[in-house]
Image 1 (cartoon, rainbow, N blue to C red):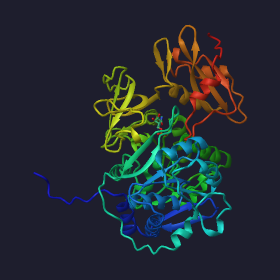
Image 2: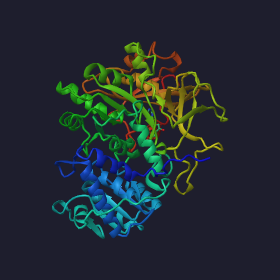
Image 3: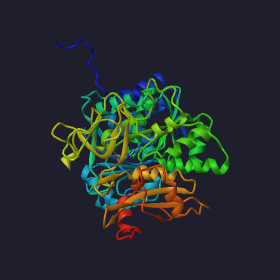
Image 4: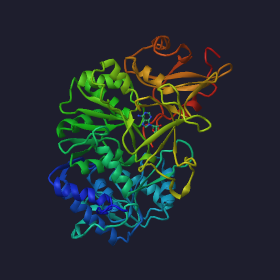
Length: 541
Ligand code: AMP
């Protein structure tokens, strides 16, 4: 017997429609690349997203066509998220930090028909345009006054396109499993692979993201995604904020400590989310200026491991609680967030900071397990570690065009992360499977060693890689960027590990560098680091 309830499809347009109706006056504030701060509200955003949908129709975009964006977090990008998906086309967020060759590959693989770009990326597009065979038109996301002189063929101005539309448009209704948007996975090896989200997966993910044990977003909040909209949907915040009716603050291209601090304070931001590097910048700015933050309560940190020292500094100096989160492009992206459970009220500060090092628990909708080399499940005792597998309604079932596959016969997706899961369900990423250091047949967690190193006051950033060793196969080498004015020595750093990890985990040596290589999404590029330290002679070798 079937239930007798309404079968209303979960469509992205319904999220904005809700925000416009019930939180129409709530602000969306953006720092634009043209310089000024732009303000409007959810009602304005829906009206303009409808005009955008009309403009797309006029440009020949139909159901399922891919429309690419190369843009920062801002109100026009927000309109593209809703206007493109809402009309039944696929919004493809391209990461402009990738190499031009990779961007060409991605545009070609997705067969994008139109590319929308912020002013900042017009030059980059000019390089790529001759190879972009599928692209029929380019749109610069600005007004007439700021339109650049450009060699781009068939180029339009965003504001001019919208100006001729009347906004008299009803969002079409269709199957919630229709493709809505896509992102390519960062892929530190091989070509990036397309992840194709659906309306249903996006709405369910946003619903989950809003809940108290995930991003905890309420209508009274002001949330600022520093994590870019071109990377993993800004962790779903452009959807979840609208669903909650929260004020949305978009930092644009300015992600330095001073600009982030200004947005937090001027706009009364209560929750923000970003990768650890961004928060290093903010903490450094606060330390140098003696400034504080007033309403900022929760800082969601993910994309790379949030070091313990960062949670301690945020909490003790500035009263900001760190929420360690983990996810992937393939997971929309949220998998886990670290909140306490009932019964943990009495936990000491030390216990809390130790817990916060873990990436957290999944919410309803995500199922996880860890497996060994032959795909047997391992105990969830906080000790055993193995490859982390996941499944759920906002996890990809395959890659676009069936390229590569990380799914097993039972449909679990292999994340490529190595982790432990404890009896309370808290997951702790110990490494990427290709970064784990294999010493004498045992595994050493590079992330844990890095976390400890950045706890030393003389260390700005640290990476630990495996270096070939004649006896042990591999041994850890700590690569460090010192803090300005720090003269910390290798010996001091190695001594710092004593008592914090097993003796055989302590790195064999320390190398000091001016900077560490990062991927386009801010993760340590360990492959490059391993290449530059190839043949490195360890003192123990
Ligand atoms: P991306 O698809 O670019 O978001 O990359 C996903 C990968 O980032 C994951 O598979 C992890 O390796 C890494 N990652 C994300 N969040 C964390 C975290 N909190 N701690 C450690 N690694 C993380």
